[in-house]
Length: 372
Picture 1 (tube, rainbow, N blue to C red):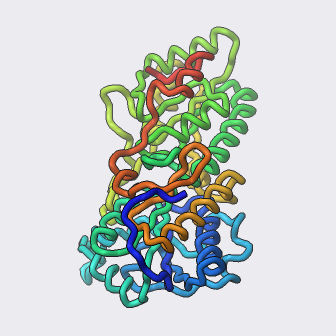
Picture 2: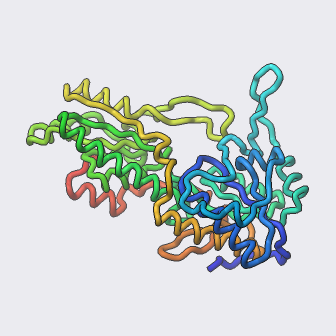
């Protein structure tokens, strides 16, 4: 059921849809649900905007048909394409001298929205995309947001679609590392995504039986990590599994940054902490240690049944909100029900792992170390 609030009475005739930010499983389920609901229930024309906000700025789109969205429920990625470098308010332009200049291209996005005669725009994306959506809404675009992020760091929804699929992949990877770690009597470190939130590392670490879980919300100490692996070794457990979030950092230390990309609104690209942890464990304990960076495998492949269902419910309600004139809102999962919240509330702060949450406490209860 949609949240109550301001409703603008409109006749919905043409609905735009785009996918912004990084890809993840479940995007096509949302596109399918929005398009089929719009055409079947409301008789609305659906315009697919290509490559996220880049397409909105550069004027690239095509009309979606029933055939376009048939058979895509189980597909990963997005049939519309996406980009994490298309922020209309922070848009990179390569000049003739090959230097990159950042400009405000929001008026181009707004003009294309008007030129295409759109009555509303459904934006599917994570924290960055929802920030952009709020700004576009304030410029007069009739926006409805759909929360997508494997990081699960969007406030005002219990879970974002894409997270469950990423969690499945990360958990399976840890399961596979168990066999090779046991066979070779090694410490195996696996680095997973999540940026500044530890949801993937926590969920996969607990589900996969990791002995040490390192997340951004709980800064770690090298001596605590080494104490854990040495204790296991002394008690005849000749291998250990360490699951580390890419945003994890030592107490008093800093994030491990792979590169700075000025074309993105958030220029920091994290990565490399898994290698750092593995090297430090070997230096301090002498135990044979290897590391694996799971990387973009977490974003690929078919969505889990949970993400297919959640994406379908999200897409259906997003279309209903647009038809009802309830703009500036984002669909949200609360408990078992899909509802709507204000986008501004969803982006008020990041959804991080509460360090005293039940899952952390459960993991501690059976001996998992968080390195603190």
